[in-house]
Every structure is written in C-alpha cells, then in structure tokens.
Image (cartoon, rainbow, N blue to C red; front, side, top):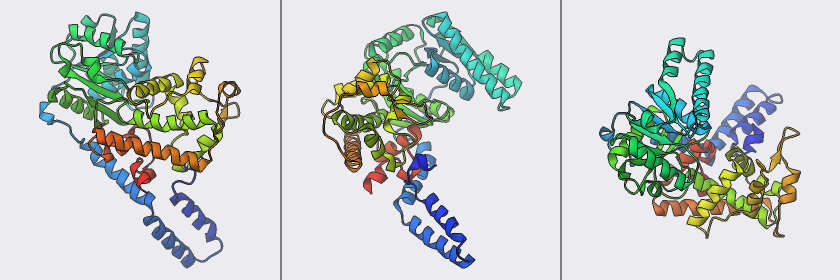
Length: 425
C-alpha cells in the first residue's frame, strides 16, 4: 500500500504506530494513544477531503448538475456501435449487459466485425463461468449481439448509435454522415471521442441536434465516469436520453461543455505535460516522477502515459496545443518516443519500472535541473491554473464536478478529495 500512497493518507500509518507501541504499554495507554491519533486525524485535511469525496460520489454523482428533465428522454430499444475494436467491443458488452436490448456492431471488414462479436461472446462466457449469470441469460445475451458490414441493415431501427472509431475529426464526420443517412430520425448519434469537438463533428449533418458526446474511460467496466458533452446544437431531448441511458448503464454522468479534451483528459494532459516539460528542460526522469509521489495518485505520470498509450497522449497534447498554445506544449521527447515505436518510457525486467535505455538514448534535455519540491510546485500551479480557467469557461457547473470527474474517471484518491481540496490546503 505504501508504494501507492507514499505517506499521503496518514491514518494507516498512525494505526501501525499504535500497534507497534502496544507491546510496551498497558491497555489504558493504548486507549489514550488511539484517542490522540483520532483527534489528530479528525482535524486533518485528509478526513475532510474524504468526506467531501464520499458525498460527491454518493450524492452529486447520482443527481447530475444541468441534466434536462428526464421526462424528455426517449426509449432505447436497440443500440448500434460503429467500430469493433477493443473500446467499441467493451461498449457493446456494457450496453448489452445493462440494457438487455439488441446490440449491433459494424466495422470496415468482416474479420473485425467477427472479432468484436467474438469478444462479447467470450466475456459473456466468463461471466457464466464465474456464476454471475446463468446459462439461460448467457444464451439470451449472446443472441442479442450481432455484427454486420452494412450500416443500413444494422441501424435502420436503432435508437442509440455510438461511434468508437479512429480519433480523427474527418473520419468521425464521415461515419456520422453515413449513419445519419440510414438511421431513424429520432436516433441519438453519440461519439466516444476523448478530445475532439462534438459540435464540429455534427456541423455537416442535417440534424446536428441529436449528436451528443458520450465519453467513457478505459477500462469501461471499472471506471464509472461518463462525460456527457452537449454540442452547440444538441437539444434537450437528446441530452435527456443520453443521461437516461447513462443511468441504466450505472455510470456516473457529468455534463460537460464542448471544450477541447473536456475535463479529465484536459487536466491530466496539463498535469503530465508539465512533468514532461521539466524533463525536457533538464530535470532527471526519476526526480520528475518522484516529485508527485506525495499526492498518492494511482500511478506516476509516465506510467499513466504508458497505460494511455504515448501516441494517444501525443495526439491529445497536439489537440490542446492547437486550442491553447500558451499553456499546452508538445514534448519533442514524447514525439521521439512515439516515432521510435516505443510503448512507454519504462521497461520492467526487474518487475519494477526502470527507464528504458533506448528511450534514455532518445531524450534530449536542457540544463535546467529542478528539485522535487520545485517540480511539485510547478505541476500543482499548472493544474490549479487550468482548473480556474475551465471554471471561467463554464466547462462544468462547479469545481465539485471536476473533483467528481477525477475521482471516478482517473481514480484520484478520496484523501485528495479529487484535487481542489488539496490545492486549497
């Protein structure tokens, strides 16, 4: 546990201290030590942040700010999924399990379609093997999922169609044009884009009011957050339907303005980007990584980058650089890592992350070396600035929504309260 929180959550450490001291004292001394520790912890910022985070998840997460009247939502009796890759297949499985309606996948060739349907079938078999569903339900679910090449065949009677194709605006516009031509007039067209403009995606359609952003986080089955993005022309009925579907999917939905990279990816990119900047300028990788350990985050910035994928990280950085060039830079070293085909900065030959010698040879650094404290201050200042600007822009209704997004979409810990309580302290 210490390798993950690095002392950031003090309660466990106080408990260990009390246990260790118990062998040298009597029962009353033990009770007294517990009382002192409890009094100290109750006054600590971590407890207040934890209570704040709990209330966010249990209350605000169940009553999304800004969601339209649920009576406007239209029924969803069939779902279409454009794409059959890993993300699209995960989405198909989720819709299938939660909605229990027909789900149709489509892709550019039969092999991909078959692979996507095969993934869903295999996951259903795993659920059956674990005893989480019975044979009858497994058979019923497998019968509800299918794959086709012809969108007209698959989507003619679909009520909710979500795309999860390559993250390029032209590709997504083409997909939506093809879907609009064959889908019913009432069907919701949803995009799982992580950073692109939903409004631009819908700009060439006859009915842009039915397009919504529906951004899931990977792995879909584990991370609860769903960023629901309202485009410039998205109407209330489409948005209400999106929120109703999110509730059935058992996701924590947060309404987000159509702004570059929305909430989580924008903050994480600023956070990771500042770490990459100090590395580019001359700070050793291990110093930059260690600097943020006191936050007790689920993983270090470069390990997170590896999980996301350097190419995707670079793409999001480029998207945000175009929107906000004064704050978001594109790391030359990250670009070199992507060009070299590396999957990350580290190798794990010893079971622990160690800087890949091939990556080390690629790095070109300046001579401005910062201390851990200087790196941490710079990174947190950057994050605080970005959150302030996002609130000024109206990306979300309140700072609480940013914390809720980081907790449920990025796994940021309760003892931080997301991030704003920590920044306030």
